[in-house]
Image (cartoon, rainbow, N blue to C red; front, side, top):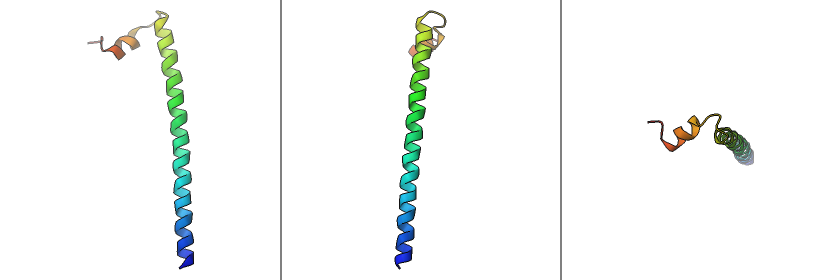
Length: 61
């Protein structure tokens, strides 16, 4: 009985650890995307390429 209990506890701890890693990875991805978006917007505001801003505002139609 106690062995089975220990196994389930280990499994729960493992899934919690995995979800924490997943959350950390998602946070990194979101931060990277923000940096990329900011740099794209900066390039666009310099007048080199406004197509991204036009697309975002829906003026591409």
